[in-house]
Each structure stands twice: as structure tokens, then as C-alpha cells.
Length: 490
Image (cartoon, rainbow, N blue to C red):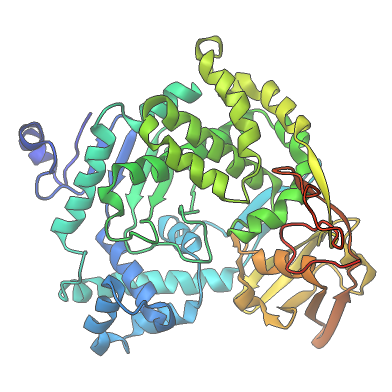
């Protein structure tokens, strides 16, 4: 293992100090490398997160570090950098981190929207300009911000975060070695940045969703939303959160090398969409939905082979999340894989067994609205564009057309609904409204405002079987999908 300090002249001293104390890193250390994983901190990113969170006072908690930051910066909140943050508006963590990592990369999202149909959606340059302006203005403001001595942001505290992660990754078997040995993908490399001040909130999954591509998979490790100030001190959190992100790299590579898995599981997409949307995973592309389910199952199997004490946490999170019903079905296949690991060169050799598992997963019938069968792509904070409709979409019965601008969903502004960026369509407002009652879209075409309404006729929908809905159901009710808010009476 190697520890890389801020200056190469400290390398001999680091070797002595690390061997002497083992639980701390020398002053000046800003990153270290263990195996094929580099972990780093970045003061500008930390301060960027402070400004981003303090700018929206409605989301500042009544106590804790963020409240202290806001109080310390009370005299500075008229500065231009806070105006730039407010101009961006509500924003999930993912787009901010992706723009910070690659400011000139075009905003795009690609994935499978129908069998054999892969689509890419691009655009939203106005929003990208606002994010870049915020990042640029924060860079000029950081030297002034550093003089306030904000809680949790000193060089010593960042080094403590690094030291905590260093201990977690060097005690026992290293995490990336475990991932490589389990998956057979020994060439995977990871570049991890600790983004302490950019904890995700209700608009993004609790493990940071930003995944910029590159030779080394770029991972931003954000703290847990409940134990934000102590997350990095917990080896269990590091193994679960970072291990899950590494498992995503395995799942993404598996799907790239064996795209036939997407065809075998396609029939499950409609059943999983509302379930995953409820917990913050945008159900736009089938490959992303299946990757998330696989990554959850992979995480359980990986940590179970080398760190069994945290397996219960990985399993309980997946099992208690109703949006991950495929995990138990994958676990059975992976148990056989673990038992006969020497018979498989890598996880790709298990693709036929995973395909059979996807084909065998039973579905229950329930009463629900038809699938929306449409994709709205955000092109600015206050509007989205209808970019795709399935042949069976209920909106085909209306006069809405591909390319129409959508300004509101069921009377709720698109910005409030979360359709902000092609890379991060927070689609749960869209996915949730339709199955409940009906879908009403306010659209703009040729300078005129229209309203279209999709009539919803409750019909049979499918859901992945976890437990039979019919068992024990009262005689005067019809079994309904879990995502419906009200029961249907006979």
C-alpha cells in the first residue's frame, strides 16, 4: 500500500509515521492510495457544499454544523457567490458533483427505454451555465470563507477523515481487493473523493449518485444523512457505502459485457418503476434500474465473503427497501457462485444463471393505473420537454406531441417536481402522480398554453412477488399495488 502526501518530499516521513502510529496520517496529507483505490479530500469542494447548503435557508436544520455555518456566515450571505447558488435553485447532489468533476462535459443521459431501443437525451446548457458560474464564483470566495474557521472544515479535520477511511481500508482485507477477487475484474481502479458537506437529501439516493466515467471510476463518498458528522469514523459505513459504489462498477461492466441480461429482465421494468421511484431512484432507463438491483445483491455477497459482521446491515437495507425486490432472487444465484467461486473465471460467467433467474421471477397482479410510458427531459429549471412516448402510453390519446414543453405536472411546477437535468431526472413526481388518480400536464406550444389530461382506467398491473397480496385480503377490497394511495372498493 502507498500513502501519497501533498508533497513527494514527505514520502519517507510518512512511511515511518504510519508504521509508528497506524491510526493517523502526517500533516499535509491530502490523499493516499491503497491497492487500486485513491482517496482524497478537496477543500474547495468542501466549501462549495457549505455555500450550496447555506444558500437555501429552508433546508437548514435547527441545530448542527449546517446551522452553525449559516450563523457564522450571516454577514456574508449577500455576497455574489450565494446569489449564484440561489440562481441554480433546488439541485440534487449528483449534477453539482458531475459538473465540478467535468465542467466542460455535455449534459447527457443514455439508456434503454424499450426493447432494442437505446436513447440519448442531451441539452440543458442554461442550467449547466448556472452551475458552472456557481462553481467559478465559489473558487474566488474560498480564501475568504476559509478565514471563518467553520466547524468540520479545517485541514486537521479533513486529515482526520482521511485517517478514518485509511484505517477502514487497511484493517484486514482491502475493499478493492475483495471486490476484484469476488468479481474476477482485477483491473478495476477507483478514485474516491470525500464530499463531507454535500450529503444527499430527499432528492437523491442516500449513496451519492454521481458516477463520472473514466479510466479510474470516479466516486464521491458523501456522509450518511443521519450521522453526517461521524460517518467516516465508522468502518461499517465505509465498507457499505464505498463497497456499494464499487459494486456498481462491477454491475455496470457485467451489463456492458452481457447486454442480453437487459432483454431477459425487461418484463420486470414496469413492475419496478413505481417501487424504485418511491425511494428516490429515477425509473427512466431499464439498464440503470437493473444495475441498482444487481449492485445491492453484489454488495451483500462481497461483504459477506470478507467482512461478515456488516453483512446484516447490507442485507437489511436491501430487504427493507421495498424498491429492491429482485435482491432475494439474485441472492440465491450468488450463493451458488460463492460456494463454487473457483469454477468461474469472473462474474460474467454467471450471466446465464442470472438470466434464468430474471426469467423465473414471478409477478403478482394488482389494480393500478397504466404505465405513463413517457419521458420528460428537463431543459431548464422551470420546464421540461416530452422526449419519448411508448406505443401504449395513455398520453397518446391526448393532443400532446413529442417536443412539447411541459411546465407543470398535476398543477405542480416542473421544478418542484424535480425534473431538472437529463443526467438526473428526479422522476418520482411523474411516476407517483399517474398511478394515483390521473395525469394532467400543462404544456406550451407555439407560444400558447394548453392542458392535456390522460384518462386513467384502473386495470391489471404487475408487481414483483414478495408476498402474496391475495392472502388475508378482506373480502370487500380488491388487491392493489403497493404504490397506490387508496384502496379500490367493489
